[in-house]
Amino acid sequence: MTPKAVFWDMDGTLVDSEPLHEAALVAALRSVGIAPPVDLHERVLGVAAGPVYDMLRSEFGLDLPFDDWIVRKYDHYMPMAETLKPRPGAIEVFNALRALGVQQAVVSNSDRVIVDANLSAVGLIYPGMRTISRNDVREGKPHPEPFLRAAWLAGVDPSDAVAVDDSVTGATSGLAAGMRTIFWPEAPMEGPPGAVVINSAEELRKELGL
Image (cartoon, rainbow, N blue to C red; front, top):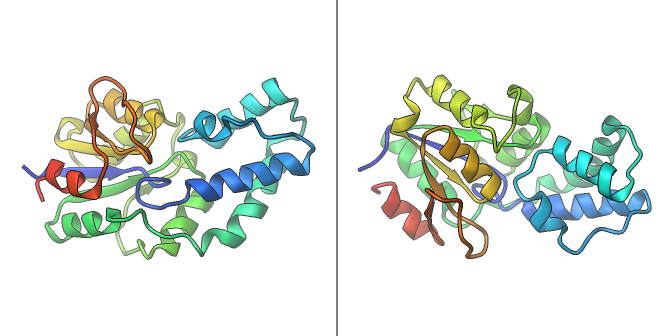
């Protein structure tokens, strides 16, 4: 059965932007003389900029103020944002749900400037579209607040909604919000307990009753 509402993560779920995030982070680290760790991608996937910054300060000696640091990253990211592409199959599922009148929102741990740039790049901007950025909540994922805010904005009970996310951080947030949570990772892996794990857009369609 198709749910009353579907709330989507953005980076890596709707938009194939994780490689650009990693490239921008690597460039910013190298610009301050820090060698990126080999497991950087795994450690920051789905994590908001603030906790990533705290990790880099405590473990790698990053000594820039946060505002200066994030400008360095975004100076690398923003010029390339217009080249981003959708995750294969994701936008088609989004549009199929929209055609059925299913409530939807994009729920991201990225800053507002990134949310707007990424969704614009893949043509996913329309009047009345609901988006939640890290700047719109007190607590980011894995806290449930971002997905709960989406449910409030859509006027649905969290138990009637589905959260779709590609990171363990995000899937944990959806589960904590009391939503049926679909974990759609970039590469096959185990999800958090309670999440429905899928590996393709075709599986996603089936899980959403399309």
